[in-house]
Amino acid sequence: MPQSGVPGNGAPETDFEVVRVRSENEEIDRFSVQSLMVPRRTTPPQNAAPSVVNKERGYMAVTGFRRVVLCGFLAVSLPACERDVPAPPPATAESAATAPPTKRVVGPLSEAESQALATMNERLMRYLIIHKQLEQGLPKMPAQGTPEQIDAHQREFEKKMRDARKNARRGEIFTPEAEPVIRRLLAAVFAGPDGKALMESVMDEQPLGIKLDVNGRYPDTVPVSTVPPGILQTLPKLTEDMEYRFVGRHLILLDTHAHVIADFIEDAIPAQ
Image 1 (cartoon, helix red, strand yellow):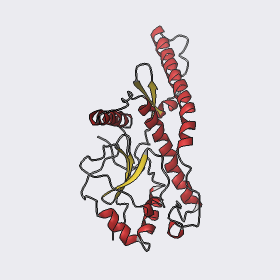
Image 2 (cartoon, rainbow, N blue to C red):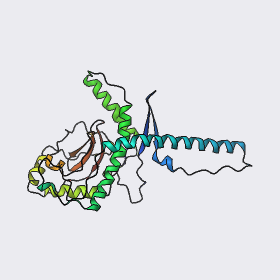
Image 3 (cartoon, rainbow, N blue to C red):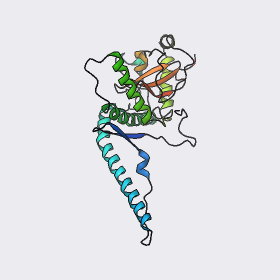
Image 4 (cartoon, helix red, strand yellow):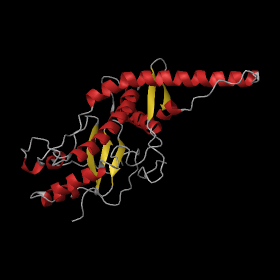
C-alpha cells in the first residue's frame, strides 16, 4: 500500500528507484539509488577462512557491477531528461494577473521561491527517468490497436510504474519546499478578479470525498477535470507526459500515459 506521509520529521528519505530495461528479454532490473551508498567493505584479513574471503570478494564484485551499471545508466538518461524537463521558473516581479493570457508567468517569485520550485523540477526529472525507460520497454502496439489492446497496454505500463515506485510518498515531486509556493500561487489566482468564476469552473465538475493515493491509479469513476488556462498560466510548466488536474480541492500531478497519480497537494484550492 503506498504511503501518503510527507517526507521529513524522521521519515525515511525519498526512495527513487532507477530502472534499467533489458531489451533482449524486456525484464526490468531495479537499482535503488541507495546502492551507490553501500559501505565499502575492507579487504578480509590474510588469515581469514576461504569462505569469508570468497564471500567478501563476491560482495565487492557484485556491488562494483551495480555501481558501474547504475552510473552508466544515469550518464545516458539524465542528459535526455534534462532536455525534456522545462527549466524551473526564474525569480520575477511579474504576475499572471497582469500578463497576456497566452503568456505563462509563474510569479511574482522571489529567488528563494525560485530555488524551491527547482527542487520540484529535479524530482520531476528523476520521475521521468523511470517513466521513459519503462515505456520504452513495453511491447509495441499494433498500428491500428483495438480499444481493448490500448487499455491493456496502458494498464501494463501502469503496473510497471507502480511497481517501480512502490515506496512513493506524498511530497516526492511536490516537495516540501515547493508545495508552499504552489499554494501561494493558486491562492493569488483565486483571490484575483476572476477568482470566483475560476473557483466555480473548477468545483462545478468535482466530486467530493475521493480518497487519493500517491502512485495509485486515477479513479476510473472520476472524470478527468479540465484546468482553466488562468490557473495553468501561473503554474510551473510540465512535460507532455504530465498534467495538473484537480480532484475535489486537491491538485494532482497526473502521469497521463500510465494513468497514475504521481503526487498531489491536499486542499490546494483555498477554502471560500
